Amino acid sequence: MENIEMNSNAPAAAKEEPKKVIFSGVQPSGLLTIGNYLGAIKNWTTLQDAYDCLYCVVNLHAITVRQIPADLRRRTYETLAIYIACGLDPDKNTLFVQSHVPAHAELGWLLDCYTMFGELSRMTQFKDKSAKNADNVNAGLFTYPTLMAADILLYQADLVPVGQDQQQHIEICRDIAGRFNGIYGNTFKIPEGFMPKTGTKIMSLADPTKKMSKSDSNENGYVAILDPRDVIIRKFKRAVTDSDTVVRYAEGKDGVNNLMNIYSCFTGKTHEEIEREFDGRGYGDFKMAVGEVVADGLTPVQARFNELMKDKAYLEEIMRRGAENAQRRARRTLSKVYRKVGFVEI
Ligand code: TYM
Image (tube, rainbow, N blue to C red; front, side):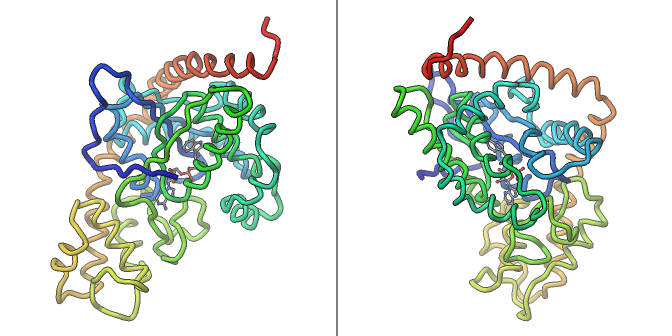
């Protein structure tokens, strides 16, 4: 798959041409982490002027793993509030909740019929999640990628900005779209993955060989966007490193490499600059510095989040506006697809 590298200064869309369409989403399935922030949401904010962007709170995906209803409801508001608090302007982007636009589930079912059992079986996320939830390996977990393909294809998205763990899902989306187009003629735009230069795979602080995840049962493994300052600093102080003492980016130093990546994302400094900055200083100093820049970077996001969460009516208004806009666009693609496969429209 061809991936486009993204700078903090996103390329401007060519004049006169319609803006390229961007689609992405986050599951409201846990506390959003700095992995979600650096791998996805923070980069989305750099795209909002040059592109036509839709960002979804993917609650249909979230129920592939058992959720407590009250938590899911609260996190749906919270995820939307985090999008806005991180800098996504609801007037420039279409922000919406997946279950408010039934076309996602409708196209998801249809694409199930154009997706092979074998290709879904190869998905590493399915393998990981079914191992973690061995008592609930449900059909939705298996067909998760076809619903994700529906999300993207409904809006004829050109680009899908995601972290590294979602690359395989983008590939299968492209395969499904290509297969459908091959049978019925050009119907779907084939989307491209869109990865940031840095932050595309933030690792767990407790086990730096594993991806940082909001569903980690060990809360020292992740830093949530909403973690209080003292918690953030404590988690970084405890971060697993190695028996060496030199702050240097090198093979085998997974813990230090991860901390350097995080520090780099929050400060804009290169690995060489970081190595120089901490030359002759130990890991203790370094971990403290990483904790502080992360806490400082998240302070304004948290302040805005707290304000937004006091105004549910405002968040619901954004959801309503976003759903109306998304629904109108999604319906256009869905009716085209229905006509192509031979469904009678009345
Ligand atoms: P989710 O909710 O697991 O994660 C949301 C986004 O955060 C990125 N991400 C990370 N990036 C860097 N380091 C990490 N440790 C890290 N953890 C998560 C993910 O790559 C993702 O971009 N299936 C998707 C949600 C989805 C979607 C879509 C995305 C549903 N439909 C359509 C794009 C387009 C998911 O589970 O993301």
